[in-house]
Image 1 (cartoon, rainbow, N blue to C red):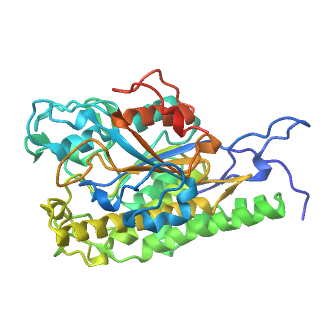
Image 2 (image 1 turned 60 degrees about the horizontal axis):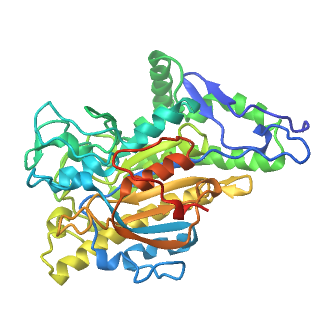
Image 3 (image 1 turned 120 degrees about the vertical axis):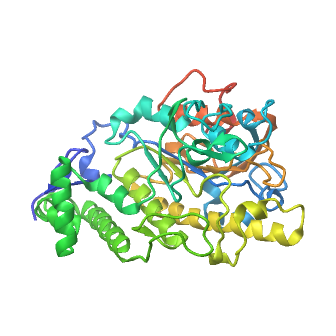
Length: 449
């Protein structure tokens, strides 16, 4: 084996219509002079949204500080408590009615990443605000192959009336490039995979995909020669990292091809999905989370948004023996049996989140992990789904932002502290400085290390 050599951070394994970006490798780091500071891995940020609020008694800890106990809804991520910030008291003024009457679900989603108060209309004259993920993409997106990725589980309509006179565009989109232009999310894992690993013009990509499908080949088969040549130039540690990364790619391909697919509307699910999308909610979510991990690992993007479901979703969760619709249950009327089922849904969503956190935590980047170099934001634009309130929102964040965040704490903020203060802080940590964002009043300095 030849002596390990330096390689460019942007080295890509290429083949017909295929481009496989590399993960963080020691060989890609520039040589540093004695006493100089080692280069830092980039900071990534993900914004994950769940619909219909939470059952807050099973969510909010009894006390603030480092000595807090996780309530039942958050127990599935107990192993990540040291890398967690639970933030209580944050509010979305944009979600309030402000004279517009009902429509809290639509407003909660529309304002969740924008902080804006959406115009009440079910016509073409929608108007909201730019979302924090798209602002980050505008500021730092030029440094990566994709400025941002927008992902989710349900497709959702882009027009029509979905909530008391509010357009469906408000309930189905987290990301807004401009106040009048929502960014539709991609729900098909295969499409996300092809986007991450495709290269060349559409004809070359289509030819490569057709060949893969015909001969049941992997994208790795097209870059095998490049991969072998690269292996001979790497040290033992980097070889192991590259092997693990290539295995992860092949595993995702296998799962995309092997999972049972949903071909249309089925009993117990009140929406339809196109053929090719995994039938099981858990399979679907985990595949997209694994693709998010690959996108961050290869620095293909540093900004991702993800919707577990469209706001107001009434899907059921037979996976945890909840056969009633989520939205219906959120209007529990303080009935204990319904509150118990809502908590089961909340806990299940967190259980799936733990899959993403485990994947990120397993990937080393120098003396940190990919999780430590990230900010994984998770929450809802509604507090208690029964009350339809937009204050004291259920908000948690994982990862240390490359060492910029002081985690392992529950922080309680004064009533009506803008959630956008957190977003402005995340932008600052992620290298996307802004003087203000929406209705922000400053940074949340106490989350910083």
